Length: 183
Image 1 (cartoon, rainbow, N blue to C red):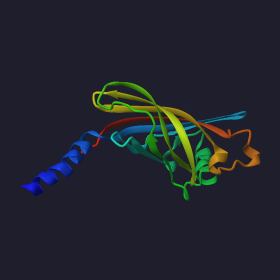
Image 2 (image 1 turned 180 degrees about the vertical axis):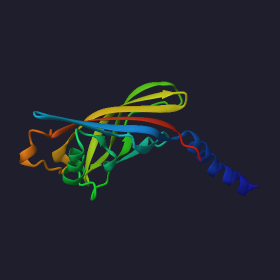
Image 3 (image 1 turned 30 degrees about the vertical axis):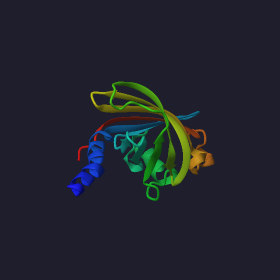
Image 4 (image 1 turned 90 degrees about the vertical axis):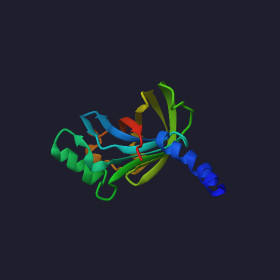
């Protein structure tokens, strides 16, 4: 009897926690935009993966760099993957860390939160605090964020010949729909 009570005491909180506390990305997109004097570059990917652990206030997101499409032409996409992002060597970008503010994940509404964590692009990790609008509706989450990435922060080199075609500051938008993880 003691063994049964001990098991219930140890595992019952975990059972409820995994059903309601972890949300995984069901659909998500990352869009980036470079506005330079001689060229506008825009690309996006709908291959965002990740999760939010509401109980621990942690998160982790990942995007495959070669999955970005759009660009102005195929050659530009090739240069993006081969010359700038070196996606053969650095195939993913990640952001993982903690949610700073509290949000009641059981209550519908919108919350302006800050996500603090390590943003890893091009193999270089930078600590960042990124604002996120989190909307909770019918047990599902929607997250939206706009931020900038400085190429120099991630050792992404711009050849002098194209400095007027590629902005050193890239605008990024992330949108994700998350649902409770089913185990």
